[in-house]
Length: 512
Image (cartoon, rainbow, N blue to C red; front, side, top):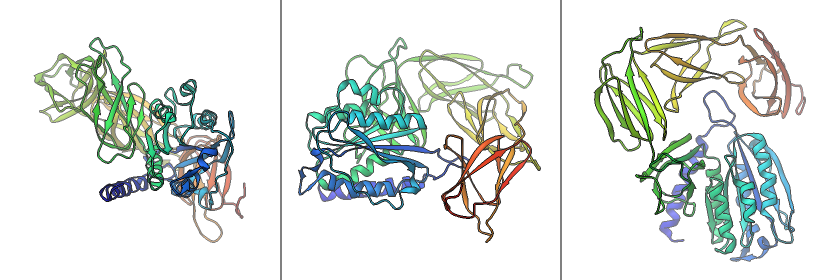
């Protein structure tokens, strides 16, 4: 690796570390959700063979320990090992919150025989699929084959993402591992030198923790779905020749990527680049057309003589110049912005291949979401998603009117657990929605007056929200667990509508 390459790699890793550090820990209002990370590590005989003055396992151990110690608090992680021959796989570090790795002193066992990656992937995927959103990182040496029949079971479908770090020069096994990453919607990293292992593992883990993903939706001229393998390129990418499959989400770091498309049958005008958003799923339409109808209504439902233009947000092209409503247009599938000059208003919508979308524009209205708790009105944030545009539409607070354009929305109020509701706002409508009566959770300070943070878990131990002592947390009626990380304690709590349930912290560590 040249000096210039080293400096660019260091700069990129510094940026990735900053992004990872900016992601939140325990889930709170508006923050990134909890995430799961599974690591399957090859500890077979091949990993103990000499490798550039060391062995692969000796090179991997400190790098893997560093990654486990630096995981964001929102992550639960576990490690599974393979080695010893066919069917041999076992749990090495049971899944646990990131905070519980703080005293880790990692020593990897040296196992005889070959590595059965499929067996380890099966165990790790069983945990991931039963626990919620997450990703898998497979770390393997040379010669670790993965049967083709195991690919569909290990990585197929819309389940967890799968990334791969290969340690060693390219050999026949690398094609299996590259296919595993491709079918798993992940990235493939290969360290050919010992000093590349740590930074590439860092890149693989950060990608596996990324809150961003890309879904390419490819269609032909008749709006029939296409299954296409596309390429992605960006300066100083650590992954080796990133690729994705249309119709399958691909987990990526946010940023702008150049796209490469295969020759032969495919979309009529495939996009040359894509901008992957910082969080959530970026949907990119490639090929196909849809129908759009735009009209404008006043609060009485009568047509307004408004003038609206339509522009493609991905390409910037104005598909429909300013034109008096109502009108219809056939457009390439994609995401569009409909703009009215007078009054100055804009709407965003997604037009899928073969879909017909009607957009009703009109004067701005408002939404008031009412919420009462044990002591009267309760101020709680809520978030709106525009169902036509499939993107955030703003944040409001209960019991306060929120100006809002007419449209179709999904609402998420940040209580425990989140309260969700879908609604349509008509032009000029002043809509009032009432949430169910809530209760509350209050953790008192200890006898010394000290407060502490806590996590609220459901009956399965999944994080729902977080709070601090002496601050009531709004919650829907039900049974919950309070986890106090400073004491390593768990409390059971029952919430009833219209009541605050107050608890004292346990007297000693580890109490339940």
